[in-house]
Image 1 (cartoon, rainbow over the protein chains, first blue to last red):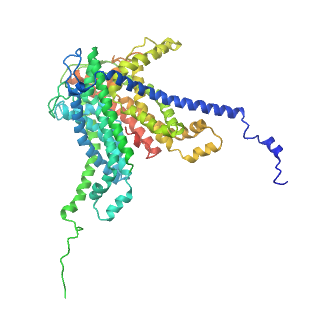
Image 2: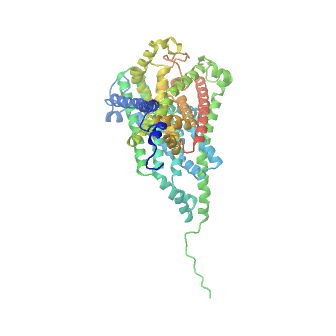
Image 3: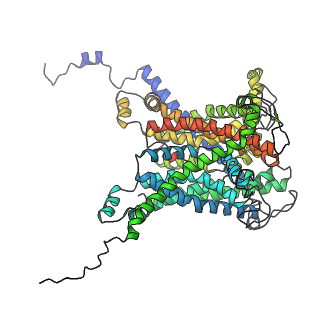
Length: 305
Length: 330
């Protein structure tokens, strides 16, 4: 039997041509196609709430939002229109700022420790509990800061105010900073560090002159995301900052305001002007957190280590 | 003949001050790393001490299983009755419902993003889902209260309660705006991003060879997804689910606004109840010292429940791969 004349007839008898589609194959293909659409449907199901939420916040928060809203105090009554959340905006920025100043350096130092001992047992313990700490309910952080700092019986007794609120936000930010920073530090090529050490650099010089500059964009990204997270937190401030309707500049001793707390007061009242300001407050918070996360992502994309 | 030249200052010689720099540096790093553990320990010890009078008066089991929450007004001793079961029940109920909704959705989104979406769509999809995680809880509370529960959840609830399913106590009417159902729905949206992020990570870990082997055998796309990718990622999905559960248990303001705060526990899904976080948030500011201890006791209970869930989740997730979960810190 020569190679030129393959036994075509008998071949097709045993093996149907690949072009023949059996009913079973057709069914499987159909199932696959249907499931592709179902999966696309899940994406739409998840994006619909996002779109609706953004639309609602912009449409209902837009009218009351503006320069006056950002710079004026809220009127004494929820029935009055006009005025704004200046007290809350100052309080939120103040507390978030203090929290960031403390927790970002602390978190990056902790991440440096973890990064230098990737397999150490103590580092493993710290890493594990940092992960656990990212999952601690924010309201529990608020209660704990209340018991530790605010309450006079057994705590430090510094009272409600900026310091307590900042402590709560800082505790929420810290594990996020540690874990994102460690991820970023891990991306710095080991060769860079070897080169520095080979030139005789000390450990701290290697860190501050080589590792940190190389990882700077990534660290910035992580820090901004953590700050955005802290700025959006309201629950722990219920029992630490307590809320204020005036601009508070003192660090301790007077309850501090917050956008979220003002919103909570406003939208639980039955008065339309107060509710409208709450929507504008929501728009402000969304603008703060989303613009921060966009900036963070732009930095991250610009410079991959 | 000997010419002694002054050795030029090479800059290589360390001064005693320089030699101390590295130990100081290491010490600072060590203290910073330890601060995480110290803060965590301080928080749990301090709250437990504050809450102890309530646990002692009620008994830990009595506190967890009692269903009467009657607040006393004392400043120095426990005079009220504190049973946290209605709140624990509500928290568990809405969290489990949220998990039931969110996990299939998250798996679907992760599969679509990783396997089906065209290249240009992938990054925007990841960002969009992550954006859901960036929206503050208070904004979810606001939009849930003034939009979602009125326009979507209550009508859906009405339809279910009106159908034959309404004969089951769980689905019976009347449908209230503030209910377990509304709270469970907002939780679904809020925990979706973290479960999706973990699923994306674990699905991406499935070796390309295994997929290609399945395709070479003639498997369709859906068969590769359902018979190769998902089974291989099962433990990662479980870990992600538990992380989501941990988030759901601890979510505060959106739940506090939407659950109804009625301090009771009932089987009906479409009626109001209460949750651990919401009773803390709603009653803390007006609470007497004694009631604050009781709220701290709820906080401690909540902490241990979430701790248990999170530790389990982290152990499972880190077993899957060290690379998984890094992006899901948020």
